[in-house]
Each structure stands twice: as C-alpha cells, then as structure tokens.
Image 1 (cartoon, rainbow, N blue to C red):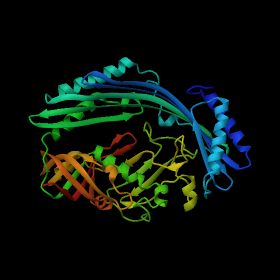
Image 2: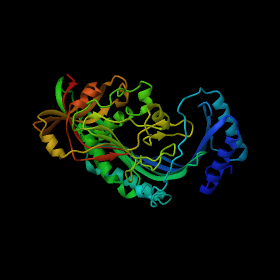
Image 3: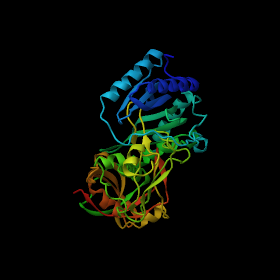
Image 4: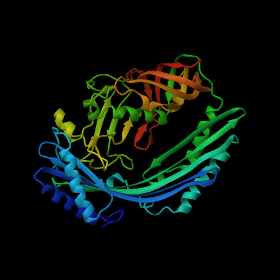
Length: 457
C-alpha cells in the first residue's frame, strides 16, 4: 500500500492495525489515528494568460499514543507500506518517552454519530467533475468582467480558481470511529486601476463548499468597485469618527476575536479573555457564536478532532463574554464538558480551535446604518489585524476606505491609522446590520463603531 491515498476499507484496516499494535506496548494506555486524503486543482491567469496551473493528490496518516502517566507521542507519514507503519509506531513511542507527563489526557468514549449528510458538505458536481476547461472559462470570464466594469482597470493581476475534495478518518482505541468528507471551491480577482497619477490595487474573492454558491462574475465586479472607490485616497484629519465596517471587515475582526475564546490560549495566559466570563466586554448589540452544525459551511463537522460531537457555543451574548471553547484536555482542567472544539493536524497533538464563527445580524439595513453616520469613515481595508496583541488587546492598523458625511459617501481615504484597544472598540459597537455574509468559515454583517480615533493629517 505504498500509494498516495487509500480506499476507505484499506484506511480502516490500517487504522485498526495501528491501534492494536500500539496497545501491545506496556507503556501505552490509549491511542488514536487520523487519516487524511485530498485532491486539489488551482488555476490563475495574469491579464488573461496562464500564470499557475497546479493539480495534486495527497494523503497521510497520523498515530498518537498516550502513556499511562499522560505522556503523548505523535508520528505521521504518507507511506502506507507495512514497514513504514511499523516505523511510525516506533517513532510515536520514542516521542512519547521524550515528552513530559501531563494531566487530563483522555480519549472520548461516548457515542459519535458520523452521519454528516444533513450538513451538505459534499457536492458531487465538485468532486472530480470540474474540468480544466471549466476552470479556464471561469477565469477568463472574471478577467473580462473586471476589464469591462471600469475603463480605469490597467491590469487584472489575478483571476484565480481553486477546487478540491477531501476526506478524513478518526479512529481511537476507545472504540470511536468516523469519516468526514467535504468539497471546496474558491475564486476571486485582483486588479490594478489607474486614474491619472493615482494607482490602486484591490481584490475580492470567496470560497464555498458547493459550486452553485460561487458567484465568480460578482466577485470580479466587486474587486473593481472596491478598488475604484479607493483611487486617489488621501488621509483624514486626525480625530474621532464613526466607523462603518462592511461584512468583509467585521468578519476578519470576528475571526481574531474568536481565537481569544479558545481555552488552550486562555490557560496559557495568551488571551485577554482570561477571567472575563460574565463580564460585559462589548456593546449589547454584539453576539458571537461558534457553530459547527451550519450546512454548507467550511468549518462544519458532526465530530471534532477527538471524535467528540460538535455543537453551537455562544462566546459573546449581548455583549457579555459567556463561554470558552474546549477540547477534552482543557475541559477536564476546568471541570466542564468538551464543546467539541478539538482541532487536529496530522503532525500535532489535539488543540482547541474555532469552527464557524458567526457575528449575529441585527435588524438594520446597510442604507439605514449609513444614513445614521453623520461624520464617519466606511472602512474597506484594514491592514495588520493579525498584529493585534492577544493579551492586552492593543492594536494599530492601517486603513483605507471612503469618507461619510451626513450618511453620504464622499472622497476616498488612505494613509490613516486606527489605534486602540479591542475591548474599547467592542464596547463602542452601537448597531449591527442585517446583511450577514460568510467569508469561508466566518459570517458577519455590517457594524457601526462610534467615537474611534483615526490618525491621519
């Protein structure tokens, strides 16, 4: 079986063999296996000419052994021959011996329903059915849509398409076993626009699990419209402004916030949410949930990386920090149940991660929110969000967008900085729109943030 991938029956046989052989060691009290395989295709054009064209198939298997004193050892590989699998057991035991004992290392032994059909994560029209001609056609049409949208488009720097499918098996010595499978499609466009001496580059794209949900013409035109609105941007006068954040920006912010509720980073002192449960950390309009049971969403699954059933967890409830996300280890530390939030890579131990983060929509249309902004700034780009300090919450971000006066859009804005503290910003959220949109595994609507200092001229 020295191949890139295995059939399901083969993978199950190999997983069972690895578990049985591992348990023969007197040092081992439990073990689990993760098998993963995928097929992917990507194509990108530069001004209508092929720039990248890549297809591939990959597979791998991982074994974790758990010692009686809480030590853990992981080994993984992509060679499924018997000799390589025997070596994997040896490596995992060596890694166990060189690790430190830990408390609360357990395996899940409850019931797991592996039927994920209700989540609609697999689209037969994606898996092996999208031809190279279809990918090329979509990229060319995005290129044409961008060029025809605005005469100031100087270059379509990228019209890209990606699709693929994947499946994975989780099996443990506690008797838990289940498969996951999913498809994915993503595409987008990046353009360079010029108006006199002004030059601006911008992009827009998205990903979905189903081909029917992809709107590649729309993504190309949105890339142009967004970039056009930023052409010739100049700094604002330094002062306090009301910010209107569209879904793309508020989703990026929600993504950063969600990570702060992972119990592993909280326990390690790497999150400002430590000790914040029950505390008002945001405006009452803010509710943030982690929901792994949303149909057709990238982060959905019926069980997590430890075989624990997933669900929905409210992280922020009307502005109040309400719950952390847990895997088995950190749930045991806090004396609570796992939220089914174990994340797992082939080469690492189980950690805690988010699934689908959703900033709950409010009752207001975007037009209503915009008309309520007397002196403000529509933020279309926020740069450096990943530099937010997770412990203090302090940040300093570059921003671009459009000036708002009396609810009406004005001149483009560039070269400004938004600085502050995450908690302060969240508490200044006064209104949430009804225009919920998903970007990958994060969904968010437009939000209004009042009295934010913007540094410019």
